[in-house]
Image (cartoon, rainbow, N blue to C red; front, side):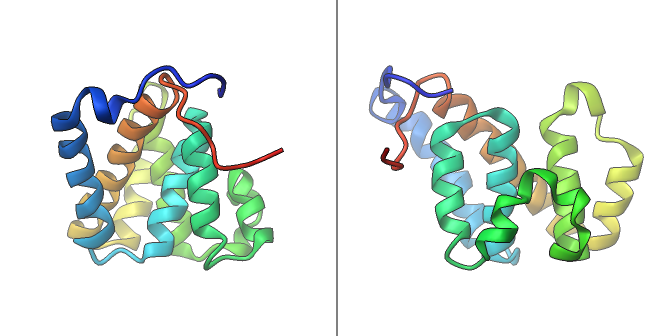
Length: 151
């Protein structure tokens, strides 16, 4: 959902913002996960959560390295397996499981697929990536962070 911005959570709670951005720095700079995979997960989580600001930002990030055809089909990635590698599909499935935790309970099937595609450290880093974006979405959407897109 988008609309009139409500307040700037970063200005109101700079220490909290600093802590959350510390996790973001870790997942984007301190892991061995490919940058494209990180932004792919950020985008998919944001699509699920309906955070317009983050969808806009991470779509733009992905378009730097990924074709528009692939980016456009991220919401239906399971229907176009030829467009996404096995690790990317495992990461997307795990992102959906963790983001929808109240209904999926992080199924054994999704965990097994993710654990087969990633080392234990990569799986923890991937899960931190998912958790970080869920946290950002839970601030961006309620406070109606603006998008860069213009009419």
